[in-house]
Length: 470
Image 1 (cartoon, rainbow, N blue to C red):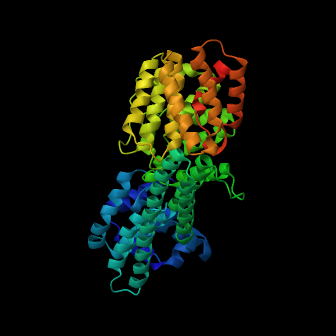
Image 2: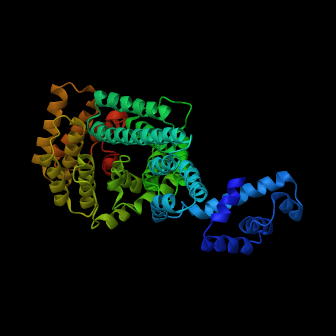
């Protein structure tokens, strides 16, 4: 390995002394002897082998490992911090113009190895650009040009994948509000698109994006048509991919979203002990959770939190959120509406029923739900319930009749189960909230039995309804 001798002989004195000190400190005597011998250039390889009393194969391994150690020192620890990576990338043009070629190549090749391991294609284009330039007069120029072009393509594919994820999340929010078959088909089309991108460019980043889309398709759209991969395995793979990425990777910040998906999964399958573990992790960041809505539909955590605390008998914990400010993207309508419902429920549990109705009416007045019957009706039925607790029977009656007419006129058969809830509330309106009757209990039983599937709503109100009508 002639280039090892050239690299060592060309090392600056300060660098040589630092590596030498490290080898002495670690008592790496064989490495130290070889390192010092190549620097002094007084012994041949054969003489070094004889003095170390090793065979030629062991000597080759020794040189290879020493080369790795020098590379590691020159390129530093890419796992350390973003500043470290930026520093190394900024070093490249300086080293190309001021350091011996052997040292520069060793530095770039180690950087290349690390960046490939961590799937950092954008940074790799900087490395390959430099390797192209220093090989302008070498036959390796074409080789590095190809690698440069390959990772430019990877970057474009990654950007396209992130674009698909963004589109998926927007459509998923619309589907969550409408339960439209057409929007569900769009979600499945986007899921197919990300699968094709991953097949063409199988990088860890794109695999993570594909997994997030697949998980949301299962958890929020109810579509699970791949029996080969369990939801739990996909979740574990997401955490594995993120854990293997360096601290500088933007995907390190996706952990919170994956924890939310874990919570949602365990809550849906009623494994409450496991759900509690992830609930605690996500709830610590409730004030910023909505800022991750471009990664997945994190806004749903707010409504799941109500249901989860109801199931756990810990509703008093909701009071902690009453005065908290939640950060959000003002253009994200889905998060805004869900947050509005959440704050209305907080007001209700604080005993501020009037405030709750103001919040709910504000959602209905500000947003146009013309094409979103599902969420429009859900908010109205929640509003009816709160009005009933306030004794506002005329307002309750007006809203229930409005919903009833809409369902009957448009023959929305998948929402016929709501007619049982409307009848139940109708009895309250007639009797002005007097004692619950057997007839109302029957209506409630029918409503609970039919309120399932893709058009299910008011899950976070079930605790209150059960308490009153069951």
